[in-house]
Image (cartoon, rainbow, N blue to C red; front, side):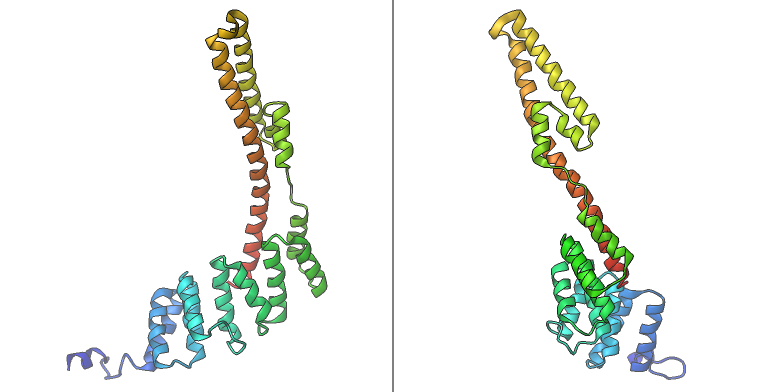
Amino acid sequence: MLRVALAQDSTGANLYSQENSEKFAQYLLLAQDYELAALELERLHFMQPQNDSLKWLLIRSYRLSSQHQKGVKRYRDFYYNFPPQAPANITQEYYAMLLRLQDFGLAQDLVNRYSRFERPFRQKQQVGLLLQQGRYDTSLALLNHYGIHDPVLLSLGQRGQNLPRKSPFLSGMLSTLVPGLGKVYTGDWQDGLIALAFVGSNAFAAYRGFSANGVESFYGWFFTATGTAFYASNIYGSVKAAKVYNLRYKNALKNDVERYLYRAVD
């Protein structure tokens, strides 16, 4: 008797009826309590497993609450391997979660295979995902093929084609010839000057030690060993600095591309 009473309001209405549960779920969504909304929608889905509207709200709740792994799993429970009959609005939520999980390979496969997305959305996402993979020439060719007039996508593609780049080999060779010059080449002027000063001072100290005491000079061999070790490490550091330089610009572009992709689905 107590359980029955708790499930009813003062008018005797069943608070856990399907109608009231749907109203409560809608209220939670409006209140942006997405995690609790997902729990309520799971219960509603259990009662109406064929209701696509509830499925959409459930998947959306998982995305908005950043429970992307759960949302992806739930979509796959509903529509194994995203068949053509899966509703476009639910599949777009699934696609958005793949982006947030940075599963770009599967996201690319989805937009290539799923034909129910609106054409402009699908085409722009295809181009954006190619940019994210570093396929700049292909992405611009596809952009031109589709006849898409999107200045942001065009700008991102052109940035990709003209990414600043430093040669790791050349950077290493420059530091081999002149200690620190490879660092200067990659824009690290301060590190380059410090390397030149350190190697030069060790070479001078070694020279003075050998000049004063001959080949048995402790100081001569000590500064020779120290200077040689730093000289070798500076060559390695110069090669690495060129790679870091290239990666910095590439990652900055990838971040901008990802923001473009996210804006279209958020």
